[in-house]
Length: 339
Ligand SMILES: NC(=O)c1ccc[n+]([C@@H]2O[C@H](COP(=O)([O-])OP(=O)(O)OC[C@H]3O[C@@H](n4cnc5c(N)ncnc54)[C@H](OP(=O)(O)O)[C@@H]3O)[C@@H](O)[C@H]2O)c1
Image (tube, rainbow, N blue to C red):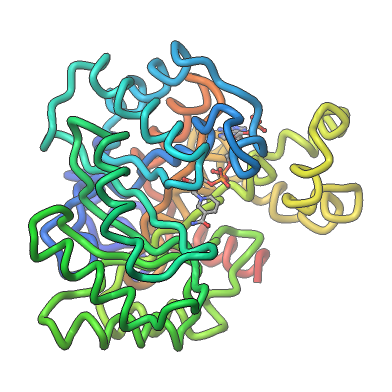
């Protein structure tokens, strides 16, 4: 599977596919087709709830420039959620897509139902709310945000399957599901002849747990796409905190804690950042682009990634991370140094 510069490591023809989008891929066994990189939209929450306050506010003008740049660079899909500002991110995204002149059907939208303190019976009502916030864009992929068993996985999947059969959504995914619950979700949908499209999990060069805990192998076996969130480890893999540790001081404590960012973790990740820098230098790219490329173009099975962006420069840089190919040796070196 791995290869030299002529052929890409994920089997796509390096010469034919190095457009910005890098070629569209099916989400699991569904007809939903996405670019290897999509835009994460948690950053558009506008501080409207506790989850949304994690990121600094981004004004609507900036959201629109981020979305437009991502589309221009070949991304065709966007990941949002009910939890991201209780609809604020979904609304900001819809507005930005309209400002960019996009119509329903021209982009792919993934959102999520939050199971916090709720049962499966809530999924249908929430989907109608999601559709209102996203209007006129329909929900393409609907995901269960995390595994909270107030209702069984089977009940949750049945509620999602009802939405799919009613034509409200085109694909069903889960998020933060371990191997056992992902298999359960897959089996529950299989009873109704529906594929489980995806499992959205944290996956990056600093966190490769899914390669060891059975999630990646089971996803490959069952034909489920892994959607890698926090693909830059929330900025850590760009190397900017290694370049300028003072950046950490300007960041809120919650972000520092969640990123696990401090002198010790920076020291631990230094060899990875240094390797990313060497490879980036050879390709005339940035460390962030190499980190994203490793995820979306060198992992076994079907892996796509959804970097978030604070401004248009980050958005462009990230979206362009699909337009080159790492060599087999470079992938092996990154695998080794991050193992
Ligand atoms: N399902 C889940 O439970 C779950 C959990 C987390 C995230 N997600 C999804 O995944 C998406 C991405 O994850 P994430 O936001 O946690 O992490 P991420 O994509 O790894 O990091 C995004 C942050 O990194 C910084 N950044 C982005 N591009 C950069 C670049 N090229 N150079 C330097 N810094 C850069 C920006 O923050 P600063 O510039 O402010 O440092 C940006 O807000 C989210 O938007 C969301 O859609 C899902």
